[in-house]
Length: 479
Length: 112
Image 1 (cartoon, rainbow over the protein chains, first blue to last red):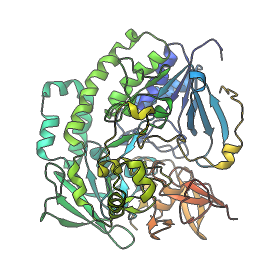
Image 2 (image 1 turned 60 degrees about the horizontal axis):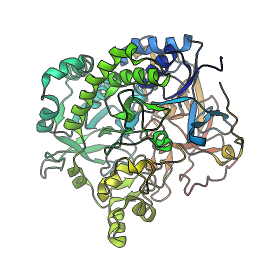
Image 3 (image 1 turned 90 degrees about the vertical axis):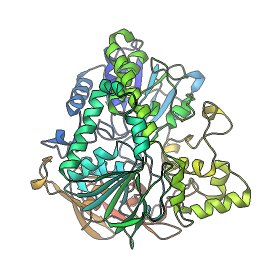
Image 4 (image 1 turned 45 degrees about the vertical axis):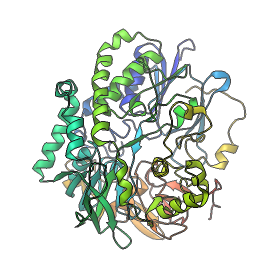
């Protein structure tokens, strides 16, 4: 490959990363696309692996043809190197540059190949994972994040249960219910925490703007029709407030919620179910952005300008780490970021720039309608597990706060052990901050004295043997 | 059986034909098909728990399904701390309940 070309590395091969990689290559750059998974598509286009190619994969997806077009273009372009099973485990800033330390090979294996990249430009498209608020019994086998249920349905063709309850908040619950129906499961109900008032404020205001987001609205309308055909009730203003069972889920308690998401006494009812899938929104995967020093917004997304440039020269960002806007927004942002990172002319991606503006309006509606409200803490009990790894209960967290008088998340973590397990607070970090009223700040968190729960110098746990075998010099390996 | 893999012949997605593989879980054979993760094989065979927690001795299996929560850690062929939801199963893999997750950054000793 020519040494003279600008080298753009894109991290993440979901809709945003795929669009960024293609745009950067089209703008004349040499592109390396990295993804931790062993296939392209990210969580949105998660699909059966090459070992089990599906005849009718498209029935599980929206815009499946877009995925085919993007991945095909990338694989056919000699200026693009796709590296799958590539886990970026740290990002360094030597002399103001960017260095990515990558391990390539089977997940968590010993002796993976070492790849060190020092690109001219970096596009972060690391996406998001579900956020699930804790509730009594959520640690029982049979309780899944909604994303897990979808991933298992799409990537494994595994039904997580026969009688499944879906609960949480946001439009994502609809495709999850759809994916479950495609596994042959009975979806007992979809319980949306947002009440009719919030839904109306989020979705019915300025209806003329929604016409511009026709793709997304049509996708959601398709799911609503599917649920109706299968007679799956969709119940706003309700939540799963407890899961019950001896060793695994056998039933759940569903309650009505008030406007602040506090359960309304006397409305509880038990429903038999062998699985429950719960998601209350998404948490952006910010590790690399934080390691690079990118400024974050008060709501903890990566701040970008009109060209998707972050506050750090040489680093662009696209997709869910810049705001939860869905695949349409991610595709548009990716195209803009990739073009800009390659030093291309944004005039050629005018269509993407306009699409991005429409899709961002959609993200604001999701937050207005489905954003987490503080009343949910009322469904916690003292014995409710808050940190799944360390099994720290809500009662223990309260006790530590009383004993130490501290509401600072880091100090409570150290004493209660909440957030110190192998997931590095990915599951409970934001919950702890909310419980402690230790609201995350904005820009200063990225490099200041009060790092948010998103700061993790090691992006994933790395085996000591792998650390020991790393080259001590910064040999830049170009795939 | 609560969780299960959809039989190929009645799957509307029409996956390629099964290429069966067997993994060994705490000494018992469990059958899946090539391309599945270890978690996929276990859940597909109706097993939804394969780890017990250190403090509470509570059962755990898959929670997040995408490699973020580390609840599904297993020992694979003697190597602990492998995320079952990410690792593709290979015929003959030996999978064991590894008990507690590592703490304090030190990984437990590999047992043969």
